[in-house]
Length: 581
Image (cartoon, rainbow, N blue to C red):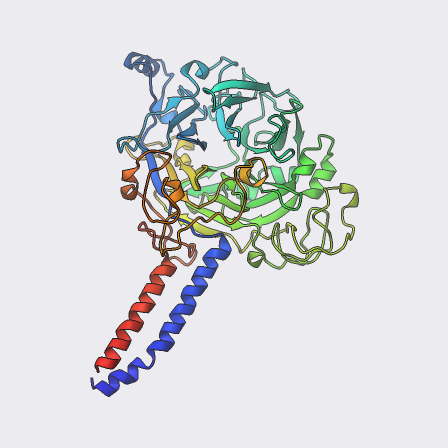
């Protein structure tokens, strides 16, 4: 090829580079619009079968011989993180679960990736049939004051032919700051949570009533999948009540069947009946707050204003009229969690995936002429927390008596029906490592945690103890949980919260204990964590168009940064060739 021919071809290089730059910029903008950078998920712990820190070998041997410990009946479920400990629940769905609430270190010790579970708060608090002890923990939450709220269903062996209903459902609160001491216990009355039919599944906490200034002015919102209702507990009043809506809290028969890794699961079987399960609480915006929820056997996500939930006199008509159907997920799901910016993270069971939805980003919301907000029907677009047009003012306190009235135009704070559809983004999918993503949680350093437990095998009695079944997974988001977006913790101010270094591919070194101006590793939670860079990981693939454009390889360089480097390399090479020729 002659020099003139080379120069002729090189004239097209600036145009090609410009096109690549535009595509790279669009990718970066899409990442930011959807909620910021997301570091790929990585497996922190992995078990073929769960084991515990027994007092001695003879105690374990005795438990095995007497059927008090049946390894295949121990399935990992809930997760919460506080300080240097990860709290895990092992529900007593079947016999042979010696401890239903336990802890492991928040960082691997000695590189051991399958630690034994330490019963929390002690072995003495794990006795089956002792109603003063913990019976069946599915979920728990840790508030900003360092108190762990453990939700005890009371009933055990709920996935067996006959459950044990001796103990009533209760809420147990432990102080994690001063020695794991139990500081409060509340037993739900039978008319609120029945020991025969209720199954308490998930819990979120609301300290926004007093901005966290009053330690007892907290509310707990609890899903009762057995009786398809939301239970509200007021710590200040030390009482509870039930909120129910048949249309949104019961299982949907059309979503009964679920297929995971070739295993069919009937989600309406068992004690839960596929009713309301996962909960997520949005940050406070314009004086309003919403509780998000979904039945296990359902494709839809719904929302209710917390003002209504905290009103113990709300009737069923008022509740049903206030329910907002946000639209369909891509599959059924169990766990969900909201961060302090209003980003909803949730599992997709049929797709072995984790997705997210930015509830505050109006650009990702579909136009919905029949959409409605917390007061009634109104045309427009936009969604909760984002700029949107409405015929009603969302900043007013919830009042069912003014439902549907025109209160004047407003540009923000409107939660719209159907806004979930078309705007949910899969951030990670893996057919091996993410089978049945169960529970999601945030720590205080910007990490998203979750459990995957291959529960389809457990429910069908096909657990293979010779292969990995249970995993604890972590990924960095740069944000905290919803609890830090409600004013309940003055130590944290909500905001973008990215905390990324200015250098390309930089990390948020604050989680490692280093400064935010360099790229050094430092320490994590005050301890060296040298194995983190070599820890097993997985993430979304840029080869799949359904995956998030915010995929970041293990070395911390984003795809947009990599594209920019490629463009620069092409330009430099072309200019060099042009002049050499």
